[in-house]
Picture (cartoon, rainbow, N blue to C red):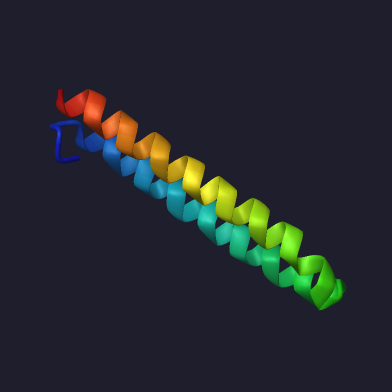
Length: 66
């Protein structure tokens, strides 16, 4: 949004919110049906996904601002 592409920024923001919400819903369902020991791999996968998404956003913002 800051780089002059508000539509792109808004769509990425909405996509991030939707994916994050769906991940929280899945996490809630996963915890209720599994033991606490099976939760760790899912949390690690979610953390890796969030990190990759964040790095992609930083690189995309840098390229657009350049």
